[in-house]
Image (tube, rainbow, N blue to C red):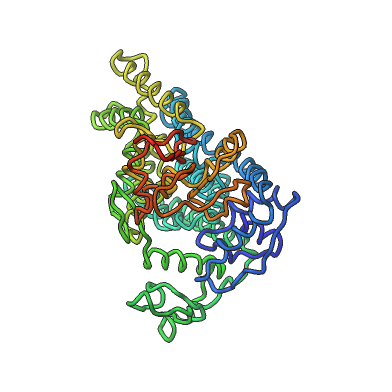
Length: 523
């Protein structure tokens, strides 16, 4: 929130530069135009200070409960991005496999708990997923019909995708390689076609870079590589992550690449550097009851397995069977163009094992897979057993998702016992990211006086600033009311192990547990 507001107030893109500014800038436009209070005194230019967290807490302190309204309007303006993502799923699947497949792909998008979760957030994950699939669809259309309209459209949305998350940089390698693969495996390709399409492809990539620069106001564009001050080991050349605390080193300085002009804004490059630094330093991660400094290479695969409805998994297996049997008339090249980006994204994020905490990093894979899976809709009405499997699987997935909605962030499928068992497998933004704080406040307002009332929820905010009058819980069992969020309850250090002998009297959503301890409390 404050990073987006900094852009509107000062044109500044340095706050929370680990992600490009587009989504937060879009989200905070209505907030900027509304009544709000800000205090920028705590801003420290040093990127390692991560001032956005301090400024974010200050924003809540200044605006209090009104902050909930400001976040609501910020989220509303992001809804069209989710709608656009769903429309492209429908259009691309329809073009490939027919209207039935289009409806199936759109339905999978609309009822996916992960899409519903991050479509209600101003993090860049859902926005970049939508922009990435739009850019890819436009590129596919260009590959089919190399016309300038498709080229320009693809280049524009490539730039917008890059302005939402640096993840899509791989498209600068993937698209040219895929185009080259198509040309060498096609017959009767003339020299003029090679030249004309090569020029158009170059223009697509150049438009993408242009829009990245436009989004940053061309600040720091074409800065020589040797003049950057990096902090990550990768770009400084350090081997000890504890060194280089002032960000004054650069492995390219004095080398042959020192004077190379970088064609993107300075903050874009420094954002990549800062993100790399985060992974190098590592963070505590959690999986299946184990806390570890660092992560697991298979984390995202496991998280997808348990946080995607089982009905979707049945459809995925049927799609695999359908493809292997070659029952589809669609060219394998189209399947390849859909599946490879999902695989590349999954490999890229899984390779960063400095920490593995957020399934949302894998969200850009989803629409590609949804569209690819939708091919099985061609079986509807042809063979009874396939039709029945599709209808049952989709109905199961929809019902499973809606029984948890609107608490979709805490969704887990029936394979592990649903949301109630989720904490045994994943924590943090996979189940509890402070999303139920407003519900906790409503519940507290409806209760008679609770004395003493203790609360420890997974948030950077002071509970009192949110209108929840609570004390920090004691270090051992003591009579009173307790509101403990799942991440804090099962977090590293097991600070609330003394609550193991008590059962919660209520759950707020699926992320906050309410305990009532008395002198004669029952286990």
